[in-house]
Structures are given as C-alpha cells and as structure tokens.
Amino acid sequence: MKKPNVKIALSQLNIKVGDLVGNQRLILDAIQEAKNEQVELLVFTELSVCGYPPEDLLLHQQFLDDCHNSIKKIADHTDDIAVVLGFPRNHPNEPELLYNSAALIQDGDIKMIYDKHKLPNYLVFDEKRYFTPGQHDGIAEITLNDQQIKIGITICEDIWYEAEPVVHQAQQGVDLLVNISASPYARNKISSRVAMLQRRAKRFATPLVYCNLVGGQDELIFDGTSCAIDAAGELKVLAPSFDAAFICFNFSQPNTHITTPEAPLAELYDAVVTCTRDYFQKNGFTKAVLGLSGGIDSALTAVVAADAIGAENVTGVLMPSKYSSNHSVEDAQLLADTLGMHSHVVPIKPMHNEFHQFLEPLFNTHYDDYFHRQTDENIQARIRGVLLMAFSNNSNAILLCTSNKSETAVGYTTLYGDMAGGFAPIKDLFKLQVYALCEYRNSIDPAGPVIPLNTITKPPSAELRPDQKDSDSLPEYEVLDHILELYLHDHKDAEQIAKTTEQDMALVVRVLKMVDRNEYKRQQAAPGPRVTQMAFGKDRRMPITNGYVHHAE
Image (cartoon, rainbow, N blue to C red; front, side, top):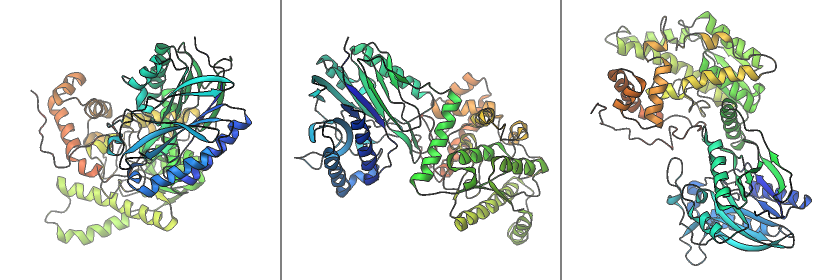
C-alpha cells in the first residue's frame, strides 16, 4: 500500500477573480507558511492565480500576460519547496490556443505544466468557450524528502465521471494523485464529491490529494472541503467548508485533520451567508438596506445580511400600507430590535393615495376588476421600491431583494417593486426552505430566537389588499414547491408531475404556464447565491419568447 513519506499542505484560499496582485499575495503568504512548517509539497486550487471563473477576462491578452508574469514571480519564492497551482496560459507556439493549466514548480523552476483535459460545458460551466483540451499526461518525477516521487496532476473535471486522465496516471504507477479544483457548491454535493474521491483512491490503490476553491464569486459558492485520502480510500484530511484553510499532513504518519461535516441545514445556511458576505467584501460594499414587512422572506434576508456583514451595517425600512396588519409592523420592528439593526418606519398610505388621485383619470375602470386590482398592488410594491432605492443611493447601501425561488418561479413578484435590488440572498431557496432556515437560525442563537414566532406561524401574505393570502393566488407551498422542484430541477413534464404529486393535471399545467410566462422577469432579477444544481440564471436558460404548450400525451 502506497504511503509517500512527504509533508504536504493544502491551501484552500478565498480567491477574488481578477485580483492578480491580491491573489499573488495570498499565495506567497501560504508559501512562506509552508516553508515555516517545513512542508515539501504545497497544493493550491484551480486557476488560483486569477480566480474562477474568469470568464471573458480570458479574451484579453494583457490579462493572460499578467497571469504569466504572476506565475514567474511566485516561482521565484519556491526555493526548497514544490508547489502545484493553477493559471490560464497561451500555447507557446500557437498563442491563439488557451489552456486551463496547472504548474508544478520546485526550487524556482517550472518542472511541468499540465493542461486540463476535460472541459465542462454544462450548468454554470462554459469552459469550451475559452479553453482547448490538453494532451500532457500530467506525470512528473520530483525529489521530495530525499525520495523520488512520481506524481500525477489533474484539474477538477478530470477526476469526475470516467476520469480517463486519472485512470492513465494510476496505470503508470504514480505514487500520488493530485487534483486542483474549483468545484462549486450545491445542496447535497459535498458528501457525494468526497465519496467519489474516496472511490477513486481506493480503486487505484493510490493516495489522493484534492484542493478545492473556497468563497463566493458573484452567484457561485465554492465550499472548499479539500481532502486527502489514503490508498485504502480512508480520509486522512477533511478541510472545513466555507472557510479558507491551510492544513499540513503526511500519509506515512498517523496524524489526521478531519473537520466534522455540517448538518444539511447548517451547510445550506452557511453557503448563503458566505456568498452574501463575499459579494459585499469583494465588491467593496459595507452596508445593506432592505424592506422589512414582518414576513418570512424579509426576516431570513435580514438575518443572513446581519450574519454576513454585521447587524450594525444593515438597515430595515418598514413601509406599512393601509392593508398592513398591526402584527406585521410589530413583528418587523421586533426582528430589527432583536438583531440590533437600524430601522425606520415610512408609511406609504399618503403616497398611495396620491397615485390614485393622479392615475384615476387615465383608467376607464378604477381598481374594481382583476387587472386594475393587480395594478393597485403593483403600485404599492413600486412605491416601496422607489423609497428603498432612494435610501440605497443616499446611504451607499446595497438594496437586498427578498424574493424566494418559489415566488420568483411563478412571477408572484413585482418587477421594479419587490424585485428591485442589487443582491438577492434567498433567490435560490424554495419557500419551504426559507421556513426551515428560519427555524434553524432560531435554534442556534445562544441568546434565543431572533425571528419572531408569529412571523413563522402566520399564513404568508403580500398584504396588498384586504385579507390577502398567498394561497388566494397560488397552491399551498407544500404542493407548489414539489411541482417546481420536479419541473425546474428534474425536468419532468406535466403528466409526470401530475402522477408523481397526485395533483390535478389542470393545476400542474397552470403552475408550469406561470413559470414559463415569467421568464422575462427572472432575466431582469438581481444575482443571488446559487445553492442548487439548477438555479435561475446561468443554470436554467430558457427563451423569453416561448410558445410551447404543456399537455398530457
């Protein structure tokens, strides 16, 4: 059984796309720490020099040249240590060809460059737009701790599915498999990824080192959870999720470093907070504002924001209308006070009345049929949107959109109203998940629940007309979320969904039609944390103009 006697370190860094100077500083700091710990092999993540995904930055030659210069500067600091890290590069003889590469550097020299073979082109991945598949086998022999070590290097997708590059390396008898990665988070993915890596190591009877990116990048979340697995498929190292980490180990020694995996709700909540925090920090924002309605969505959004950037940097604006219940205002104020965030109350009834006065001459019928009632509801939402955007502009605070995935899916949101905002923390959470995360967050606070019980237990309502409930317009969320998950995530057709959910076909078709006809809204929505394998945006790409009719066979 292979047990290389080498001190190895994993450095899962929170890299910022395009910040070559800042990323280089993080890498050099890690190299110095590795030297202090007498590490012999230090492993970074995929495209660690420039961040992942760099997208169309890769179309600029100056950017690629700067990445190359950064690699050369980093190499100058690799005396007495071997380093594996990722960067984009032009082919030296055919500069129009671009590769997603890994450099093996030792004692100031680039010993080998491996180019990624498998270029993912599904879900959020678009690597075939930029990169050319590599040909090098990724095998190199280097001296570590007075031993000749045969190492096999691959990049992310190369180790998934059929894993041909890794199979070849194992067949060539490498002593150590190294995979550098930028594998984005999705619900249930962490455990399945680690299990896959354990199967690889055990199948090839070869120790495996896997280093994954950590942190938020726009809508993407990278969980880290880097690991080292011995030749028997047993975990030697499991790094924390959603935190930068530097971990040293030796396969020949009994020391282990295994972080206890998070429970599913804790993992999901930490993913959302991580993405929100990094969106603010990496873009230079320090303050947030949101509308507090006393409802479940704004409550979770407020708590996430407070946990991400500090409650003292979050402001809630309560904007009751003539339809708002007293308990909603009280619940919203209680939440703000419990969190310790700033709050303001701005009643919208006077402004709402002014709109009525000026718009009435334009309408043949004044708010007494369906379309005019909807107009009146949207006016209220847009008044609130204007107030919040004014506060956002005046205080240099990012407006947080409080829309969830269930309501966004069926268009139960108002364009330029409650959809207004620069970031949407709960964008990829179904309504039932919003409730579950609220209860989870209440359960872990040592000072007691922060979200009022009434917010969680009362029937959800937009409160835009008398005695309104969401169930007046939508199926109950237990039914709606099940239909949506089957349609959006599993790509089931109407008849399959009706059979699985045991719901009336007419109801299923109605929901699917709502989803399809509101694509134009979603394509104007704010970005938000991607926590599923089929988020709105980069994952699910549907035409706005769409004449397809859902039907039973």
